[in-house]
Image (tube, rainbow, N blue to C red; front, side, top):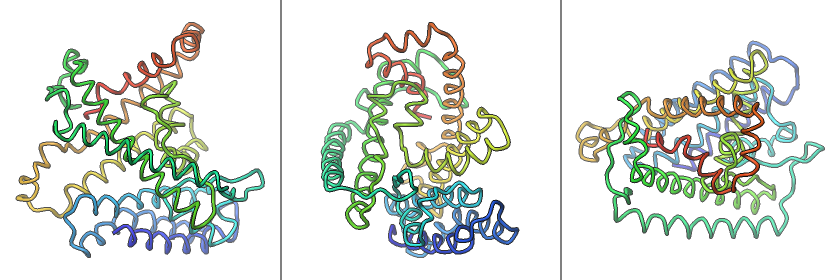
Length: 345
């Protein structure tokens, strides 16, 4: 499943490089824009064809099929709007690696890909081993408790009445924290594996995609912009934020990013868990009891509000002083508490 998606990505990269990037112009022609638009739209439909082709009902297989297409979607947008990194487009082969592989390559001041050193590869290998160890440990701890180590809680969904005592219940917060930590480690492991592959096979240095946001973030912007899934942050910055910012304010551009984040998560949930499954399969797997379309978008919109609040409070000296004087662990706790109560959405 993953290989088929990466092969499609390779075809995408060749089309985009040949028609959109090779001849650099300030503005794309109508035909170029149409080609890019077709590729963007196709990114949302091709996974359905691949799932049908292999007739897979396996959730993990569906996930690895769909995930690369999120990357293809936003990297096609960045090419349409002219925000592809110059170093990525220095050759067709380099661009194919940049476009297809789910990693963020590093470019030097001369817009050339940075070559990975032996130490970079060694550190990446250690990171992979460490991620595997932590992930296995978390699964072994959480799975016997059905991933709710503090018991079932009753915090409502995003459309229901918010009962503060339920949202701030220690058991609910504990469950949300460990699920978020598990998700962080799973994403970090995937990032480390693909980072290793690119550095070993192609020799290009890549960015560490997950930088322990749950335990080290110093602000909401630091959490979402510099620590949590740096790859997705980077492609959305170039594919959504910069194009909108070109014509609007930073607040509107940030709103666009969080809405896009919510929508692509909704698409993933539908395609991976609900698409082309029979009613019997959905009921037997208890899927509908755990899935609520719209909840991801609500979660990301809440975090947009948090980011706007952070920017507002940053203008007050008292808030800046508190951030610099409080213990780092306490700051991180306060940061994750802005989202942890609604993480179940």
